[in-house]
Amino acid sequence: MIILMGPAGAGKSVQGKLFTDELGLAWISTGGLFRAFITGERRKELMSGKLLDDQEVIALVQKALANIDLKDEFVIDGFPRTIKQANWILDQVKNKKLQLTAVFNLVASKRAIQERLIQRGRDDDNPKVIKVRFEEFKHKTLPIIELFKENNIKVIDINADARPIEVHREIIGHLPEII
Image 1 (cartoon, rainbow, N blue to C red):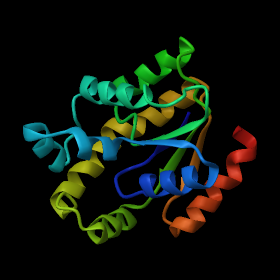
Image 2: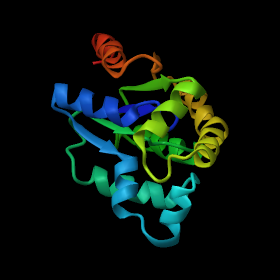
Image 3: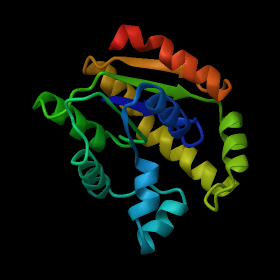
Image 4: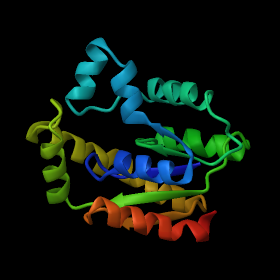
């Protein structure tokens, strides 16, 4: 498993699609799962920039994982988003249920993120929600990078301010050292 991490607007899904199309890998996008399967009040919370409950997110990811061959390399983006979710992954790795090859941490400036999200034009991409998402990422997701490093998981920082094709080339350039 290769994880793509970064704040909303860093390009995780764009890179996930490019990466998996080029290499023929399975791809799980948690944002896509949320938009497809979360409804009602929980969807309203999601659209306001709040993170969903850890157990709900883990259950959705487990359903997605049940539909792919875990012996093959695959890419997941947007998961984990909290320490609890990261610990779930680490437990899966420890118990040999999952194999974690590397984490690509897409590092993007606040300015680039705001521009991309506004251009994307979804209803939940407005300045108020973008601010909430950025704060959620800073406080809940960013500490996961250190947790992974402490657990000897290879974390590769990628400059996500660059154009998508340049980001893709940088990711692909790291493949020989991880696969």
